[in-house]
Length: 157
Image (tube, rainbow, N blue to C red):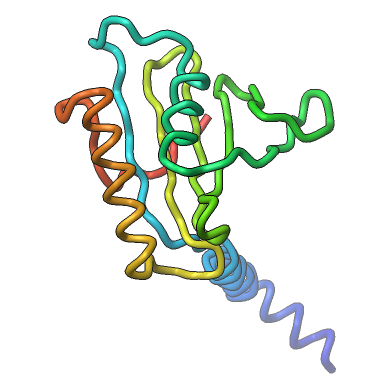
């Protein structure tokens, strides 16, 4: 009897729709990361060298330390991973290890995304917002207000 009910439910098209809805709900709940993303467009800026090095220096001067990221090509953690046409890096604040900056740099696109977030939180607390403002101000100082935009989705490969 249970088998007949399941076959009828599948035939009606409801089960696939229900499974898809459940998958979307689950993925939305598990991948939500609060925070903000800044994008830097360096296409029209003269003097920009190797962006991973420039971003590393800037973040270290702001009080961040690098965390290793997994490089799928070589199978172990590295400081800068290159994959799918992007450099990827990760930093955390020295004074608050819950504050992280995930960096994605398009190798061929002159765009850098910096996703700032607080581990374990869907939104930024007061201290995190202060760090975020400081990061944004530094990016504007380094690259110009016209080249820094706020709240972009993280760069995708």
